[in-house]
Length: 164
Image (cartoon, rainbow, N blue to C red; front, side, top):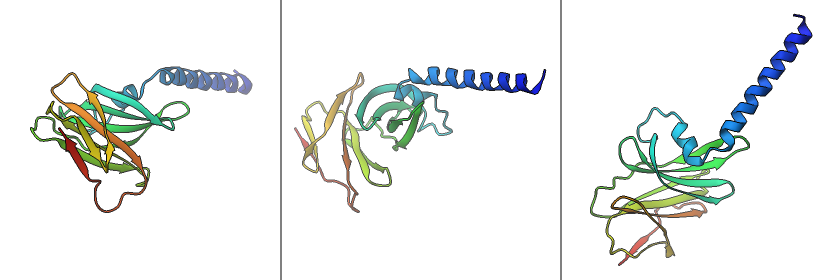
C-alpha cells in the first residue's frame, strides 16, 4: 500500500472509533456513567440508583448505594460527548435512628450540597439555613433530603432544623 492509502485508512478507523464512542455515550445517563466509571474505592463505586435529578447548567445530582451498602451522592456534569464527575461525597450510614447529615462543597468551594437520610416518617420537613430541603422517597426504610446552594461557605456549616 502506498502512504496515501495507509493515511486514509488510519483516518477512517479513527473517525469510526470516535463515532462509536459518541454513540455509546450519547444515550448514557449520569448514573450509567458513574456506574461504569471504575473506581478503586468501594465508597465511590455505584451499585444501585436511588435518585437522580438535573440541578441546572448541565449538572446532575445522583444518589446511589455504593459497594459498602451505604448511601452516597455525586455531582456530575454533562460534557460535549460524555460526563465528568465534579464531586463524590462521603458515604452516609442509613441504619441509624437519628437523621444522618452530610455537607460537601465543589467547584472550588463556590457550590455546596447538604444532604442526608432520615428514617423517621414523622419528620415533615428539614430546613437548612431557613430553606426547605427537597425530599426523595426511596424503596427502603429511609428518605433522602438535600439542598444545593451557591456561594462560598464560611467556616461553619449551615444550620438545620427538623420539623415534625
